[in-house]
Amino acid sequence: MNPRERILATLHRQVPDRTPTDGWFHQEVRAMLQEHYRTDCWDDILAELGIEGWTSLNPRLEFPDFEARATQRPGPEGGRRAIWLDERTYEDAWGVRHRIGAGGWYEEWVDGPLTRAATVADIEQCPLPGIEQIRDPDDYAGQVARLKAAGLFVSGGIPNPYKQAWMLRGMDHVLADCYIAICWKPSTTASTPSTAKWPGAWLAPAST
Image (cartoon, rainbow, N blue to C red; front, side, top):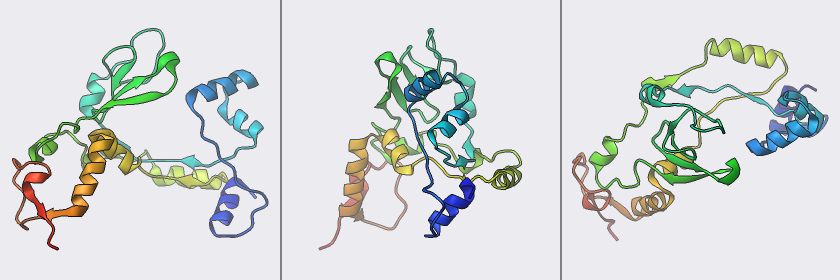
């Protein structure tokens, strides 16, 4: 069996020739493995570890304003293009701020553009991406067909919506919003004024 056949068999509750394998590694672990195996070829390292995984081919979001303002990380460390506030703190395309930990290990969430949203107007003014900003890979169907023909299982998807929500709004606010949405309901079916408070001013207690 090739990797595609092995994964498809497993998903269809059939018995493959062996258990499909996959691996996800933090960047520092990848660097250690590359040093250990003395190669920069990640495919060779995965083969040595017996990990075949699968391949992904996803649509992407285009952020023209962000891309025009983004720069390389200042200082000697290098890193992704972003709106860098200092050598360790940056703002991503969604307006979420992150801080890189000491030694370059891991990142922590700092703030999101909706953490202080108090009205519906605040939410409407947040420059969130629209459907017109979605871009498919070039020759999407052709690329998928070629990957399948090479014996690879191909996945496609979007970032975790819940994770993106809490990064934009903050975990405490997202949890509170969910609780309020369950326990309260709109007092009218009319459209919500953009100046209404979020969420209390336009929500009334549910009837008992």
